[in-house]
Image (cartoon, rainbow, N blue to C red; front, side, top):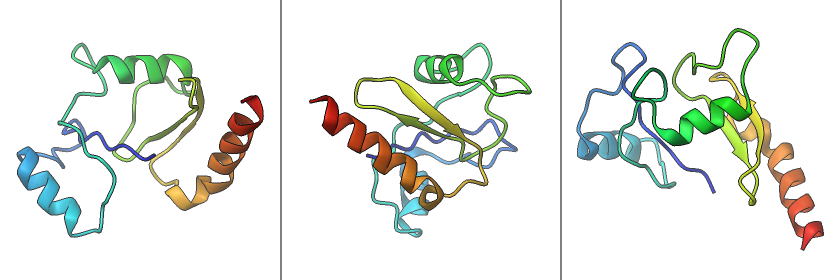
Length: 107
């Protein structure tokens, strides 16, 4: 399942209200759940992102560098991979399918 967490920490690109954000993403055919706007970096970073960044840091520091960073999380909560903004969801399809197959084998 894809989950979206809007954030306005990157050049003020997400200044809208939840309703405005939803209307904007609807124009792009977004069908996955969108959560309330959060901070992903700094002292007010949401605990989920504190955890994700701790589990899968980056070479140049753990902070999220720009919008559309992605994390692949297993069914058990293990953070399997981290992807930068230029990586499209279709580019990680193989990783997702591999994670689902491993999860099915573990049952």
